[in-house]
Image 1 (tube, rainbow, N blue to C red):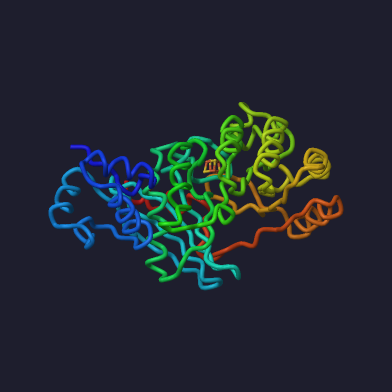
Image 2 (spheres, protein in one colour):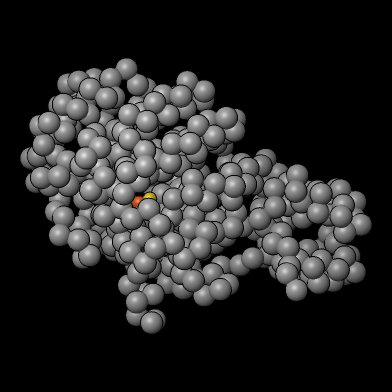
Length: 346
Ligand code: SF4
């Protein structure tokens, strides 16, 4: 029998659900707080419910759980990488990073990914399945419990394309923002996308003012298509127009992710075009020196080239930072750890 996944329901949905099984609405708030504030995972432990109600709930519903499969600790900067085992035995990756402003979690939204970006290990076996809102939230709660620390910033930048799992991602954002639960400010959440243009317009209408981060990686359609197949569907121009709309609707600054790959997108002409297309847009560029993966021959540019790129952007009045590498000693960029372990298991 299919059981309803309680931790994937928004507060509103939970109210509807509780009502549908003949209980009073205030029980929904108690249940939501138990799951999303107290991070409870067993229905039998909901002490504010009678035994009868717990039994009744257990028959028709469940709280989906993850288990920590492995944890990798960086000795350099305290970054922790997690491999979580899902109930169906799939594995996903999440990362907890310590910054001055608090603990940031990078979470996955899908098992694998179908977008096919050439520099990314998450996509090498395609999309296995999308995660539920509860599985996204559980990554946060499991890391908080394990580290005994509150996560203040969330980035949807692990495995998967969040906008390809649109409904579940929106529900997750709603759940994690709910003041009666985890109560994370939308301003502390960043969603990273490879540029699914129609979904960016849709997101702009949701009244969820999170930071939108675009994986651009090249200002030229022809070059971008070579590293990001999604470029065959949506042009750089379309993406920039969608970003401007998002800017306008949400008043949030856009982050442009730009992975620097030697000889591919670190040339003078890339720089000039990038400056041209971003002119007048409220944005910030994150330069990410490539973390080479074993499945590809692409290389990271020299330090001198990376810094030259940065200086030129500053000169053109475009705010820019070179992303500091976190957990360099346990690295394995996005998707690599999971891939190593799933390959080993097969
Ligand atoms: S970079 Fe993101 S969108 Fe591209 S394949 Fe990897 S997970 Fe998917």
